[in-house]
Length: 221
Ligand code: HEM
Image 1: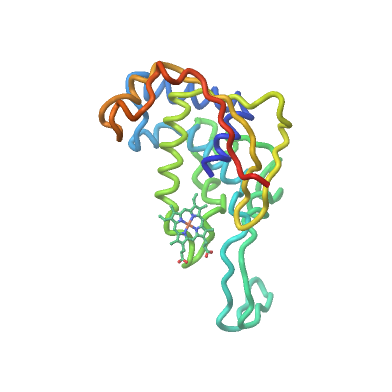
Image 2: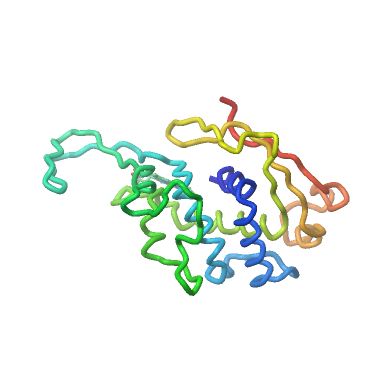
């Protein structure tokens, strides 16, 4: 999921610019974003929900089986049938989502810029029912911190020499094939160098060491 959010950052510069504007305005440049900032950064949350919907990187859930004959909406699912949810299809259903193939975080924001919780709860990536993922809230918080700190500190650009139409490896998860991303620091590394972070200063790189990175991410085919 982290790799998908990085690709989308590089591929949609206007979206990235809006996230940077929001985090700079709400958090400021004197400290890093933290968990308590989440309710005040709706555009970043909208970006994350749209990244989960758009990528649907867990396209189908773990298979389960019926233990009795079961009826769903009038259809008989006989005992011992293997069933799983096609999450990708739920997230790209044109009856639910307008222009489902467009990447547009604003679909999750109302006219006042607040998150539309009815719509965010329609994104299906953690499955549903008794066996749904127990890591949902933890994952969302990790994704929020990962994204908000990265856009606060860095700027991502896609490699113009690479085909913007991404290639993926399809399996239990959808993984991007290798791609490169240019990363530049937006500022000094003073906030990241603060001793509250793990590791000694000697182990970490400083602004003198890192000015620009070119990252190669994704799975070899
Ligand atoms: C974005 C990240 C994640 C996604 C998209 C995700 C998605 C899923 C999905 C689709 C299932 C299958 C549910 C089913 O059987 O129908 C699942 C199960 C599960 N996930 Fe996650 N997961 C994520 C992160 C995590 C994390 C961080 C943890 C642990 C802290 C976790 C723990 C589990 C466990 C224990 C199950 C099995 C639940 C059960 O069978 O009762 N997941 N997850």
